[in-house]
Amino acid sequence: MSYPQLLTPEEKLADAKKLLSLPRIVVICGSTRFMTEMNEADLRETKAGKIVVKPGCDMKSPHELWSDPVEAEALKVRLDDLHRAKIRLADEVLVVGDHIGDSTRAEIAYARSLGKPVRFTHPEVDPDA
Image 1 (cartoon, rainbow, N blue to C red):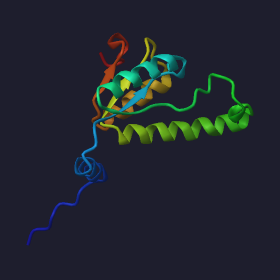
Image 2 (cartoon, helix red, strand yellow; image 1 turned 90 degrees about the vertical axis):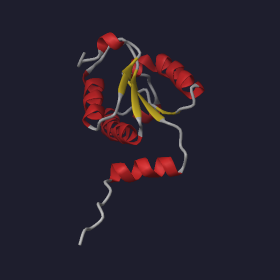
Image 3 (cartoon, helix red, strand yellow; image 1 turned 135 degrees about the horizontal axis):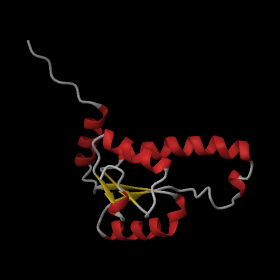
């Protein structure tokens, strides 16, 4: 007697996206110092018919939500977890900017470990090229 193969969570998500006829989902990664470029990439990817997710907080800019250093550090941890969830949700990754820091390098490695295609606005900064 053979048993049906159980689907992984990733396979279930891919199947659900197909059943819902969702467009490709692209997650934008990179330093928040490139927020202007991220917004431009968002426009271009949206015009191309993709669903875009990207960082929603620029903690390099002052704001009351992260003015307390202790709260800011806790928020950074939560935002990093949230961005990894966006990477898991996405079909592909677009790295924006001409500089790759440690956080972005870790996001690229994470995306590639999941088998996600990774594109760059500046391909010369690809750490694996």
